[in-house]
Image 1: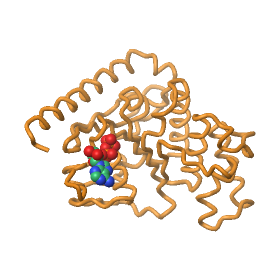
Image 2 (image 1 turned 60 degrees about the vertical axis):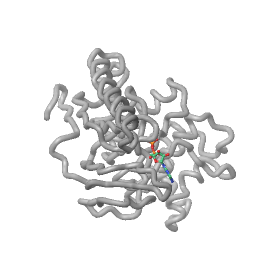
Image 3 (image 1 turned 135 degrees about the vertical axis):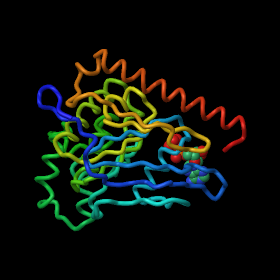
Amino acid sequence: MSLAGGETLRQGDADPLLILHDIGKTFSNGVTALRDATLTIREGDFVSLLGPSGCGKSTALRIIAGLSMPTSGHLEWRKALGEDSVGFVFQEPTLMPWANVFDNVWLPLRLRGVSRAKAAPAINALLERVRLTGFEKAMPRELSGGMKMRVSIARGLVTKPRLLLMDEPFAALDEITRFRLNNDLLDLWQDERFTVVFVTHSVFESVFLSNRIVVMAARPGRVFEELAVDAAYPRDEAFRTSPEYAALCRQASDVLVGAINATSAEARHGRH
Ligand code: ADP
């Protein structure tokens, strides 16, 4: 769909990248973290998994990442992605404390045998994109939480992944830092055209970032409802304070409340 200013909504006709078919995950302790989760991730999507704690968001992300195997259902990759084509960013930046910023970002390339000299142009370009130029030699302990997360994002993107998986990356940051990182992440996403699956429990963050929100419910973890966020990109500070954004947040919030109520009703009736 074409919008004013030539901007294009990034949803709808794009090819599926990945389809989750009736994915279930029951752990050996009997907890069903995910039941019958069906979900299509399209190329170029920015999809948020939104829901209360314990609804299986991280489990779904770990299954997509190949870090955990589903106990039922299957994943269908519609595009063959190489090992470099999936990047991860977790809530904890998990930087190597003994290595400087540059070397932390180099790590994924280094593990693939790329020398420092050969990796340097890509690393320097990325550090510029995450506003860390001048901090190449800084050690993690010298950085604020937001800067550490910027390093973590650069490290997640250094292999130029087609799919970036993010597990509550900004949950531990103060609001101002979080807003800035949201803006910078969207800029990167628009320029580099990777696909994002983003786990969050923030309605405001999911609406700001995503073209699609998958609202999940808990006990058992499941897909409750999908919402399209029909607002044009780029989204900036003007969008953040717009009536349109407020209305979209209210809509998503209503669905989330429904998911939370469904959780407690089902749990009360012992249906988990
Ligand atoms: P979310 O990310 O939405 O908070 P999770 O996917 O982390 O939810 O967890 C979903 C449910 O599965 C929770 O009840 C959690 O306690 C349980 N769970 C997660 N990982 C394990 C595990 N390794 N073993 C047993 N239960 C787990």
